[in-house]
Length: 252
Image 1 (tube, helix red, strand yellow):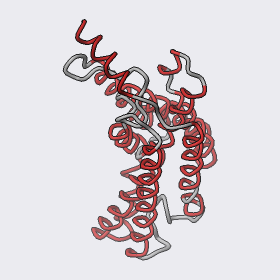
Image 2 (image 1 turned 180 degrees about the horizontal axis):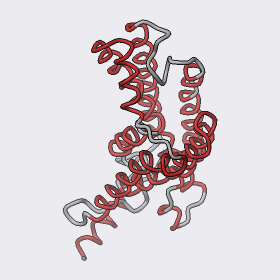
Image 3 (image 1 turned 120 degrees about the vertical axis):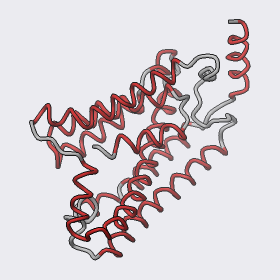
Image 4 (image 1 turned 90 degrees about the vertical axis):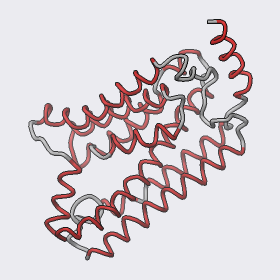
């Protein structure tokens, strides 16, 4: 116990300060601008979300891949920019870092349960609310296969790049919201509330409600809030939050 206490106090003294509030706010605005790249694509039927019947195979694949790579490059630059104003080893690390896995694995187990819960919520909750069951990745592949045959694997690779790039934007926005909330309201309990997931969930619920109705909105809100809990339990490290975000969003 004494060793664990020394670890926490030592890590706390070395964690330093995080990014400033203006930089976190600017990072959120940049993430919003990057995310808005998807809006004109989503407004064109069969371009960004389903089988791509309006474009041939290579233009469709190139469109997905280019936008996804733009998102990935943009989030990397924003993260590096935030890191320059932070003296912490991990940019979004909390004031009291979580103990290592060798000392306490409970936070990892809880993060795993919350992550699985978020995925199950995205898969099961919509049919429970409206009675129609669809699985987004399977539906997408059926559309691509029906249009391009086995060559749809090429378009699927482009869509995967597109999806992972957008997931990076969402994960960075979630982490920035959480850090900004804790900087504005430095209360002890704030570090235990998934504010980032709740805010991103509310934004996602608004956009999901337009094409998918209230069931999609409720699903997005609950799934993203659970994703925010995963972010906290994994030490606010994007190397864990980003893959979890990609897995959850693929089913939303």
